[in-house]
Length: 177
Image (tube, rainbow, N blue to C red; front, top):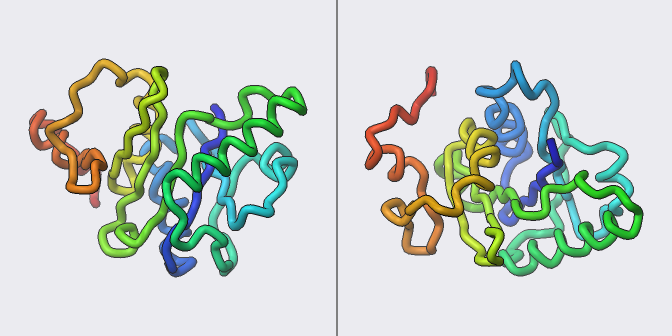
């Protein structure tokens, strides 16, 4: 599976980052033994580090994110720079070029993560989901271009997956959280 870039755009504790890296793959641990996320601490992280390490495993050490306050467009530009480097070095497939994972100020409050998704037609959407469902949603995203996910949209345009699953009458909790 390709690596998904993880950015931190708010002042969060390292505990919160580690909570995400621990809870996100919990449901899929049997089929995905390694993390699918690479924590990009700042814009100076070279592409080679992403290619050589491919994932970030918890626990991570305390760090100061270089993306505090970054906009979605800023993050897309950062992904594009890594994608360009990937193509130049003939490493196609290392990075997931359609998805960006973001721990933001809301992540601190409610254990949710924002996922930016670029559809095949170029349209960009934003999804928000509990930490533990990030991996299954990421795995599902490329197949959902045809789905009407609009019944769970927040004021900021993010698709709130808990509302979608409630509307579909699907058990969202999966386990003890």
